[in-house]
Image 1: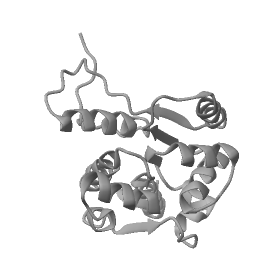
Image 2: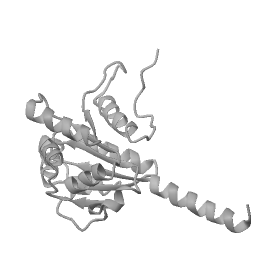
Image 3: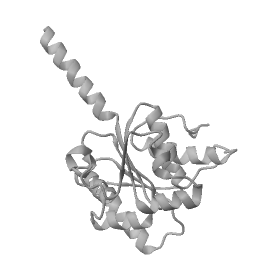
Image 4: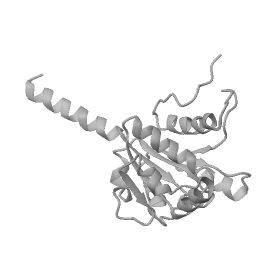
Length: 207
């Protein structure tokens, strides 16, 4: 292999690495906003280029549930933060999905699930998620709702059949969690695992 070919190979490797270091995180208006914040914080510290989409209901829930300004909090960890009405953001294009590791909506509200299952691109969040389904990208929806009725289960099934992954925010207790943080990290770690990103946020099952 001559010097020119070596340089080209290295350049392609660098481009591929950069593609793999992008992750999209959606935070919708459901209880459990802390899951989304923790995911963004972890991925950013691990060197991933996070693109965050925040809905208006999520801002309200964060204020009521956590007493925080969600936009200010997320801006501590990510340089690419968008609100749901910014439809000119890079993620609005389906071509952007192919250069990322994938997308997690955490938490994912039942309303957001319904829009995605119906193929309704009502805002930047649902448009981006549907782009992932169209391009066969990795999409994880961390549902934080209970109980689930027939309508929600049918919507979850539709998303699954379209290629998405439904992950209920159901913590496992085989890890013997001692704090709320342990439970949060379990859910966040499992969701990040589904993008093929290994992490040490929780202890995996072993005997």
